[in-house]
Image (cartoon, rainbow, N blue to C red; front, side, top):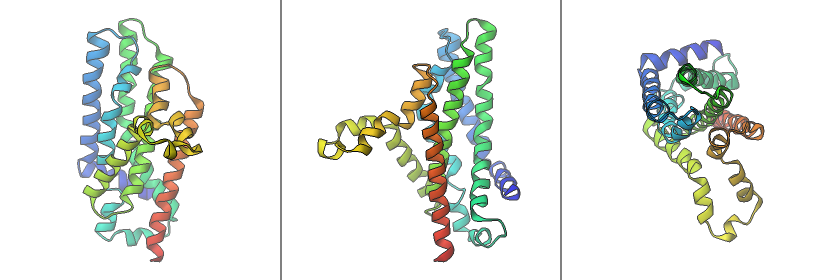
Length: 239
């Protein structure tokens, strides 16, 4: 798994995708941070993360689009399927490599609450909890993007498909309210609005609540989509 992790992580910076992804998130965060916190004096950095929700929707598909689709297109996935490393470890190694790239801008984000603290009143506990929740939400999107990348050999289709799925997740509260009663009158649609992926982040950023149940929900989604990815690749092994 360690070899897969190193190979995948190196590939993101050899192809410039890692640099572009990090630069884009840091630049957009800097714009929002400058406007909300430095110019308007808002003491909570978590407000910036709430504004960054849609930005992460656009960035994650760029990060995940090549992780498995490129292997499938170049036929190098056959080497992975026949390698001595077990398939779950291969998938986990690739996922952790993407998580490492994603963690770099998140680590830079952690400087922002400290800058606020150095210049006035800050709420470090709430802000760092929100940063952690933001990272967990992004990790869910990475797992979803990885699964979709496993379904196709086209990076473009993988990116567009991932963006489409996470956009539906982002808009789910509004979509569910517009559905007719006969579609929403069941347990699943009644449960999901209480645990929407973006709604959990809002508990941290807007209401300053440490939503333990929401974090467990994030972890459950991550494991679920990693399991789906393993099954998707495993199906090709036997086909």
